[in-house]
Image (cartoon, rainbow, N blue to C red; front, side, top):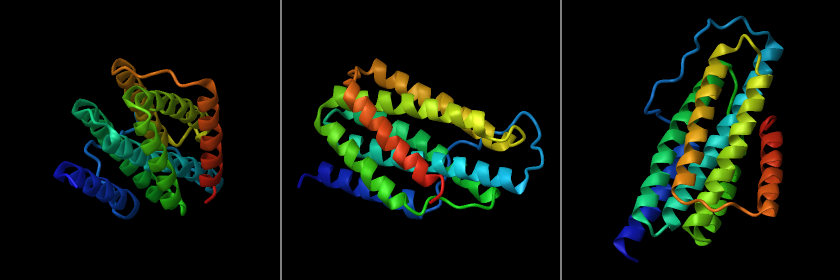
Length: 210
């Protein structure tokens, strides 16, 4: 096995272990609200925690997806693109986990399952070629951006800390989609987009509770 492939496999394994079992470390500070948090009721804390747990699961999946795509692409520049995006997602992972801790809640118990599924999707996307792989990035980020917007609509108005994190995540995801488009992303067929939406719906609905 070539050394570069061995290194890539070891990096992928290290990323998986860190994502699932080690406290994530953000490269950038947690976004801070411009307004002071209001007092949250028990029900509002439960609602906010459920939404932030879903967002944390999304970042677990993003780590898996980008890691798998970086592993399969033969293009060094594109590998750097995926790795850089993965770093941004590590920030998101850390921010959402920190907020869950502050809300007295936990991450999803099914994170290993979510990671495995997203990693498999990333491997499949990578095998279909770089343009198709980038197309998966664009569609994934578009769906995530819409999903985060729905969370801004559903988070308690006084939960400014969670809202600041989600707003920054939205901007980062939009940038990832734009970067992928500029790199030559292919538009995915509509049936593939719809299948991705169904899979995302199953994941987010389950992670809301488990």
